[in-house]
Image (cartoon, rainbow, N blue to C red; front, side, top):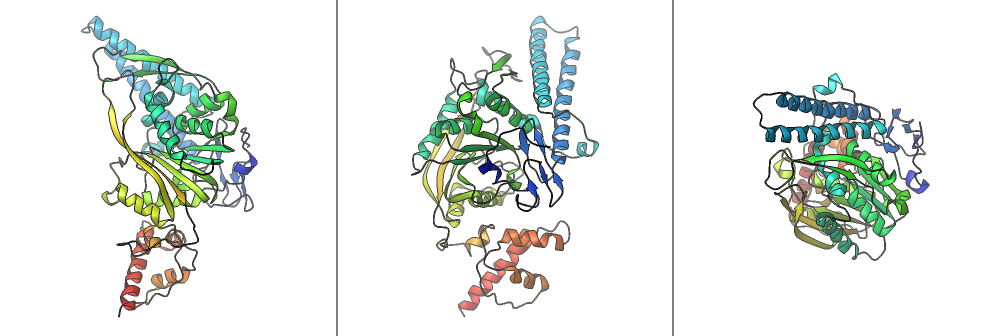
Length: 465
């Protein structure tokens, strides 16, 4: 099976298998959506290549999520129909419910049609029903924010100011980026504005939500309009109950959409080789990435070209389930960036309105932290940082330098870890090697950090005696 998308060769050459990290020389075949080394088959969403470690099974998850989303919509429609059949409704209540029913019906049909157009057919899965694979509709409002609430007759201040923040930071670069990666691109608006402004060799916009990917593809690459209905669950005076919107493609899409690409992937298993991008953008992403920001910085650092730059914008509203120790402050994240030999060239902190619907009296205001950081000389070690035992011990993707560790209590695991230190391997790579060798459920990275941290302390204490 081959993709229909005309992906440029220089971009294809940067892909690898997200499961075993095989390159095109090792058995990964982009055009065939297959890795021959680990025998994993991948798939397309319409013509969007989708590379996840689960391979084609990720499509099964999406099909189940689609069935759940549409099933909930049908249940909601049934509930409204039952309410409309009551004898104790006033005309005003009946009219309000009828409007919401129509809006729900339009959205159900539009979403189903859009995803079926991309060959994503709703199919419930009994095994997945006992799990929580996530809600495809969680970020549905981003489609409205990016495209529906912004038109020539009624421009969106939110989109405009978001791009101005980006544009201001780009002014600090001495060279125009040619290869751009956007992580957590959502419905695609900011990645498209950036692409249209810079006109690079290519922009790769990545997301893991098929509904947002499909909407972005339909509007930008296919240049087809969409229709969705917006409605508010809480009545507000002088505002309509519902509004059906014809969402049109951006006027400039025909000019340079040919080198703006979408990719379905998970940030923690990106199918991309190191040093591939001049600029990486993370919009409203570092606090909702689902993991440790330090590891996200490691991924970004590895993907950037030697003089590449990372541009971030968004708040620090970490998800509720994230452990307290991982909800880092601006100060901590700045420190992590410095440990990777990246330098923040410029930053700003602004109060910005978020998801401001024309149908909404209420609004949300967030503190938005924007910065641009550039790779410096990677051959030099980061300067010592007070309170940090070693940069590589805090930033788990950094190589562990050759060093002698005095071992006072020999243990096979300790000896195995020390034997793997070769000046190139990191805590992450050592942990990946050890995972199959340790009992299932072991927090391997935590174990490696604990052992190496104690060895560093013993080494420092030994040096002072």
